[in-house]
Length: 247
Image 1 (cartoon, rainbow, N blue to C red):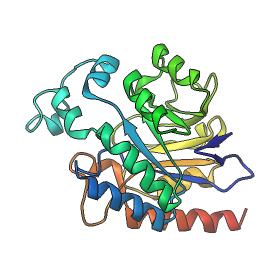
Image 2 (image 1 turned 180 degrees about the vertical axis):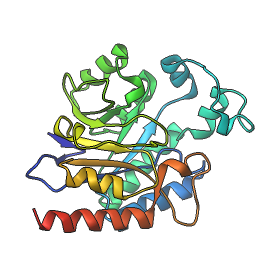
Image 3 (image 1 turned 135 degrees about the vertical axis):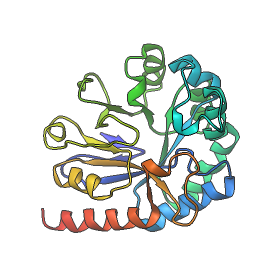
Image 4 (image 1 turned 180 degrees about the horizontal axis):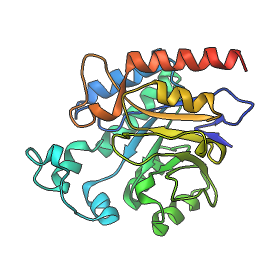
């Protein structure tokens, strides 16, 4: 198995995926800074999110805006619009990753976004835990023949093709239980601010660690409570590499 061309498995180094999400705060220059900082911190892979507000609403429904964002975003469409990484950025961000020597891939949430990613030769796709069971999107991604990364919780047992990451409930994840899930999953998807939790997952056998990352001095406007800082990421990677030396 591989992610963005990097082999994964118990005989490989733990692969640390840096999720940009919306931590660019709508600023393309900040997105580039995150990529450069993640590379310097030792991340193995950069991951983007590709969607339009219409795609997310079609996939997940409109629903109520979470309380933390209701004052600024009256609808989920408005919130999704704020959080989106514009499709026009993706070719340039991918090219910047290539120049920096940092492999990249993307989560995908709709057929239109999948077409955009195929046009720039995205090497791997990710499906989020919230979209587990959305067969039309899954079938479209599988039809590309690219490797597939999937997140799911305890109630969604790994089944079918793909690299499976355990994603505990919550956003942020208030309580994380690791020992049992790590025996069934390839890796761990973390949404929080405590780097010791993904480190424990790696110690317990996770071959892949995924975490959201923000710059030290420019926090995420929407997801600071589910993101590590770049300094925390660097410490996490260094700790994982020290742990691997003792295996």
